[in-house]
Amino acid sequence: MNKKLLTLFCLITCFKISSNVEILDRVSVIVDDGIIMESQIQTKTNEVIARYQNQNIPLPDKNILRNEIIEKLILDELQLQMARRAGIRIGDEELNRAFIRIAANNNMTIEEFLSSLKNQGNSYEIIREDVRSEMLIQRVQQGRVGSEINITDLEFQAFLQNDESIKQVQPDILLGQILVSSEQIANEIIKKINDGQDFQELAKSSSISASSAKGGLLDWKKELEMPNLFADAIKNKDKGWVSGPLKSGAGFHIIKLIDKRGEFVEYQDQWEVRHILLMPSTIRDSKKTESELNDIRNKVLSGESFGDLAIEHSEDTGSGSNGGNLGWNGIGVFDPEFEKIMLNTEPGEISEVFESQFGFHFLEVLGKRNKDVTDENIEDHAYAMLFSRKYDEELENTLRSMRAEAYVEIKELD
Image (cartoon, rainbow, N blue to C red; front, side, top):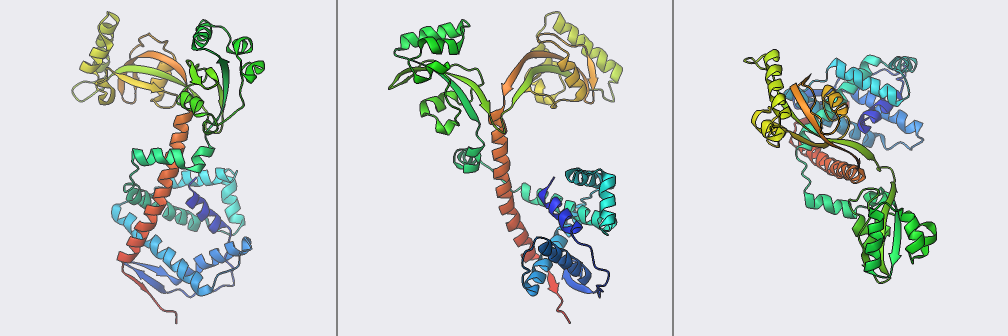
């Protein structure tokens, strides 16, 4: 769940307003075409004080605290006004889902969560509207700030190479090594490996390395801890890969990528699929669409080119020009009905015509593999980190500009 939403929840639920505090309400701040009431400032102040006290943190000067709270409320009001002008809405169903996620993150059912709020003396209705406001503010920020962020390939690659936190999540890799004295011997051993002989047994019988007694197994290491000769060779290689002869001052090395371990290590079943799609329309109903697609399928079965027919007939603009090829994909990418047919179709087979939410298809599974997607996972993680950093910087600049351009009148205390 979003950190800001969790923070809001913690801040709201940690405080129970004392019944003996009397708030004299009035307009305290005018913000463009909106207002902030004194009761809002007092409520927020009480919440923040309670949080400081619960965490045993010394309270700041009350005037400094009040000014910080007012500035936060001003920025919130400006963003909520922007949401209203843009017509952004958070419906009750979306809000309900947010509360279910909050409850789950606190290991509660929604019923237990609502009961907890009531037992703590908190108003569910007030908290619900506060959460709605926070979600509106996040939606405004995502729309206004996210579109301003640009990450170049050069910048991203530099981040991948140099950021220490990314280096730490690189996987540990287990290599096997066979070291021999000549390239000719190395090539003879590689031929034996390709013919099915066991790498570790060959390492025991042929390697002149100290690791030969262990079947050539080296210690677990990250790429950056390996000799450059090995690190460069294994880049973008899958588990089980065996190198050609690698020359060093010690002789000729044959290495095998035995295994990987780490937080982002994942081996994913993937399918390469192509399909032809026809969609019903006002001039071609579902029955006629299905019939036309069956005619095209029969042409494929009789020997005509699947790719050529996809280019000519498929109404999937994304894949049609590529002969219907959807590339390699894992589970959870396609429409459920499409995925079900894909999983039940053997490579090289042509499926029956079937219907999904997009129209009528038939497909062919071109291949299946178990793919090491560790590098992709780390790159996704790195991109999210870099985006988050740039987002925070851009958000600060955006809020500062928004505040400077707004009309704000803070009423003096009597």
